[in-house]
Length: 270
Length: 126
Image (cartoon, rainbow over all chains, first blue to last red; front, top):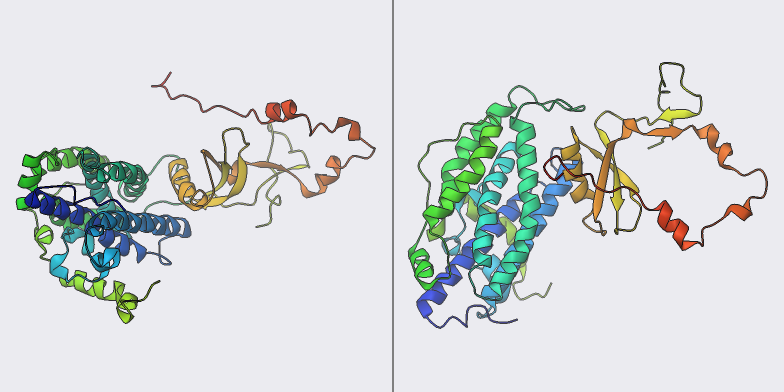
């Protein structure tokens, strides 16, 4: 394993780059684990399998990014995923929230993928190998995740397709999706919460776009989808905290459950 | 699922030929055909439930291509498939020795059989 971070000479830039990678990996770990909770209880067997597969891919992405960080640190990937207190996690709060309902998971996935695809593209252009190549590879899998979310969102909230076979949406489907969107939106804006790391990365030329520009690109991507579905884009203020390690009890509860087996014997080789 | 026992379709307004059947499938079932490599024929691999073609392809991708190689997927409403009836099977049984027709070892012939269709361009691509 080539050390991804050790080759960055400036300690401040190295720490900022580590923080950026941690955001990416923690985001993927959290949404991956939440999506895995749909395994066995999805709305139909096909979407259950598909969501479980997406969950596996997200956890796989988290693992690969953690490996980049862990190459220079003791304890490896497992320590990063399982042995950090909540305050050390840098994921956006939206991704730790419980699934609540299928419509919330789909809304969250749609909002997240529009952000994540763009972020991986930025990471792929950061000029720092092997992270840039890895980000380009991971980005290929995100396309399907976004398609899955968008297609489901259109079926749940949009007008019925004229050639629809068998299934039709019930009357309250769009209202439920709208409610999920209202709940998710402020936390989705938390994707773009900044710390000192953002300025450091921008000045060092590793990060090619400010959080503000990223948010503009994200809105330009999600607004047409939401409007096509007849949804009203909320005008809420951002709910922040995740990028600074301020999380909800949902993360603690989820992390306790996620690490139960690992904690039974942290030294075990699985 | 037992196949080939569905209602008899009507054909050209008249009574349907007795040896043609539809599949006994619900309206939202789509048959999935997978092409493993470019030169291979599409092979029926199973079904998905979906309200429309886009969703059917989306679900087929994750349900049938996660473990096996795939370069292209087809979906078709299972109800749209026309099948020969079960008792028509004897039509396929040669009554006399026809081994002189067997050309399975001719590779060129196999390539012709597997020529298949190309993906049609969209209006924008034309």
